Image (cartoon, rainbow, N blue to C red; front, side, top):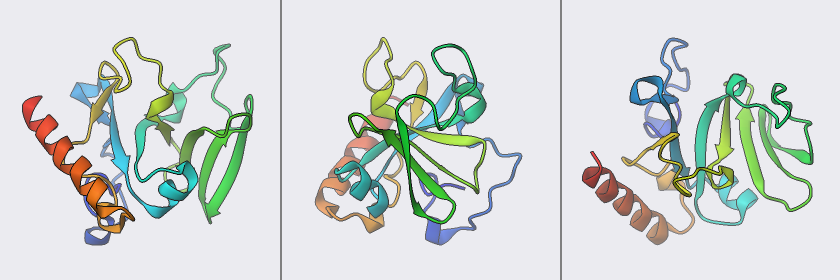
Length: 159
């Protein structure tokens, strides 16, 4: 189970293959959330990274072909064994995070989604509001605590 649902240190890293944690709203939306881990902070250059969790089979190239991690200008950085970050080789934008433990799920940088309704892409995504992933590891704990409080308030108002 990913840290966004429960602190990683409090649970097993094994997720049941029958628990589709990335699907929400009766399968009509993908799960999305924010991460404050050091790896995300160092690679994005900001204290919080927003991710959408999408099955790789649902990501297509513009020509309709299956998603390929070598497509276009994507470049890869492996920050630890079995974990990968893909970014734009032209502008440096964070694009994907994925790992060998979850081969079918890709974390997509939510800021890259081009939804008609705006940056939160709420027609596509259901945002985690209970916690910021790896909040306890945050470098800027004041900022992350403020974001976490804001998410909980926003979630309570939109429940």
